[in-house]
Length: 530
Image 1 (tube, rainbow, N blue to C red):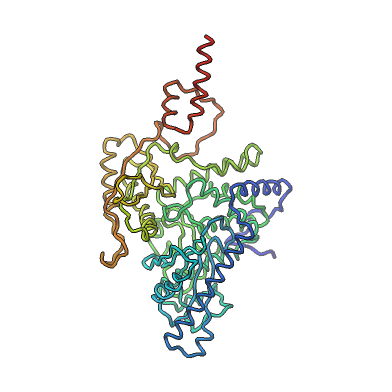
Image 2 (cartoon, rainbow, N blue to C red):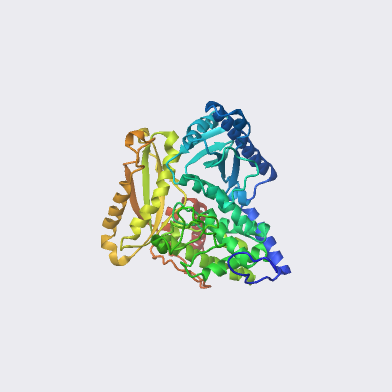
């Protein structure tokens, strides 16, 4: 009997035809034009950096054993292991992507030592820059840049005296005796990534299809778990599920089926790769029958490792509507690709954020005087922005709110004492019916957002203060209101703009000066001819 992947049998086991192979080659050529692949030299450099980090980690563990007067036998066999996970371990990382890595140490250590002693050891390396320890995060992490490569290190303690090289983290007994929930969450990063690779029938096709979906999501501004969209793990689980039901399909077919299946998906039916074994380890896990709050998740995408979690818990009403719209758009383009009426490049066309939304809420964070805390503070603000979106959604005038996934440098000021500033943009769809109360309601939501505290610790113990000086304004970008639905393509020609309209558009777009000069030349010739 052939092996069955996932919860159900395959939808189709048809072998690829020649046309499918041709489409896959076209898809690969298109993705290469977006420079998503690293060359061999860059791949070897990443492997070298990971090995160097593991060597430093093992040396630090031995130093800690000596400092704690651990017996020599234990010190010699203490081991230590670093497990890369995330996009790098899946083999779908793009140029400039970061490396997520799990550092596993013996159980007699304390977590605090990793964020103090090992942090100091890393900071002393000449290759390391921009290093920060974020202990208060949901998953505590050390972020650093090693020769230009961004690295995120998480730490977990194994309930053993040593960490062998052949350690199997997929065994559920690994998390059985782990007391600290932070260690369990750190373990699960690698466990989920490894399970995904084991649950797909063809890893090569899975990687190509996932690269295509990630490129599409980034181009359409819907790739960010922090801002309420879907992150890398969510997209990987969705693509892996398509691979399970089409085990023999090529990468191009998997991409087409991805949009077809999920454009018809009835949410909130969860997406699962496998039925996770129910263990009685007293760890919190996602289950609508047990946890009442799990029933309200709009787009559940469940991890394939115990304890199973929903990777899309931050999806809101607005982001859910935007995700569905973009998936339907992708499905419409893929149908045209199958009919040879469109090219793959049309799927990856970037969205025009300012043309899509009628209004844009611009809010600026100011007075960041300490440069060393700038990156950490920006990350903290981004993690809280989805709370602002939730507050905006509760207002009757707001039909939809879309946060741009990238922050922009704020307006420069002549006064250097104001420090640097950073700006975030939120596209708004406003209900005309409530236009009179719109500004008042938005001001109330924004005031609530500015009152958020940066941490529960006393202000004297925080590395920085939550900014109290904020500005925001609503900019109108276009006249026609936007509706979050798939717009049909029409062959109707748009009427030519009048001269005042053309002049107005030219004034707004300084880069169209050449077009304006050509327009004036044609106008002058026509006048002279008359």
